[in-house]
Length: 271
Image 1 (cartoon, rainbow, N blue to C red):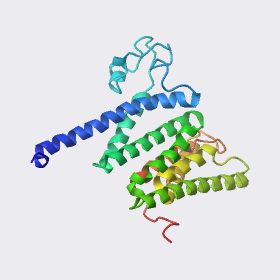
Image 2 (image 1 turned 135 degrees about the vertical axis):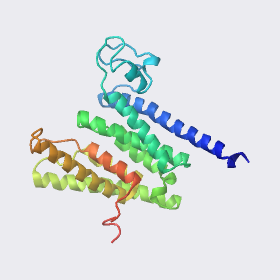
Image 3 (image 1 turned 135 degrees about the horizontal axis):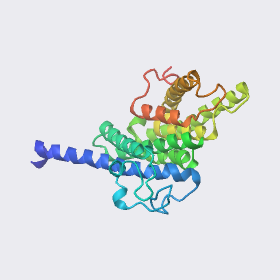
Image 4 (image 1 turned 180 degrees about the vertical axis):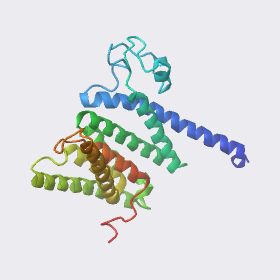
């Protein structure tokens, strides 16, 4: 039968991988639009793609992810001004997110697609927070809503639909409470803002996707990586001790890690 033909199976597997990688490149390209326009309150649809320097529209053949940037040698065809290396980087990260989701949950099209969507949201959060020190509600609260809606598909939250729904709701509430509590204590102890409202809502969104344990692990991993990064910047003299750094990128990194691998100790959930 055709489904038992090794060559056919290999061709279908290759086609599936090609689909996910191409989808990732395209959505990664759109992520550049989201990262640039969303924090500025601009439409994500109109106007179409254009050079941010000369404002001229970008032709479709100059808008092919990664390839166009390479062929144009990183410059606008119209004004010859440089196009940031971040554009192809984000497109490649989009492809990597799609490939990772399919690699981890190959065959489960619905959940792989949902996991890819939250990876893209976290990617946008990381770059927007780096640029602006803001995390748009459209992304953080959107993660809460979509995480709850997608929870019946989520194999990481339990075996039954009701368990998954409950875990998602409890995770969102726990993530919000945990981050809010730490922000409150930090402000009381250090007499300055420890975490922003965007970080609190982001961890609620993470909890909706990963449950209470996932929100906790995300905070642990994000805090550890953020501390290492901040320490390296201070040691090199690039920032001073009281100078803030955005926490969203590290929470996003922690969430990506936790989506694929939860920390083994599970504290305090396995006591």
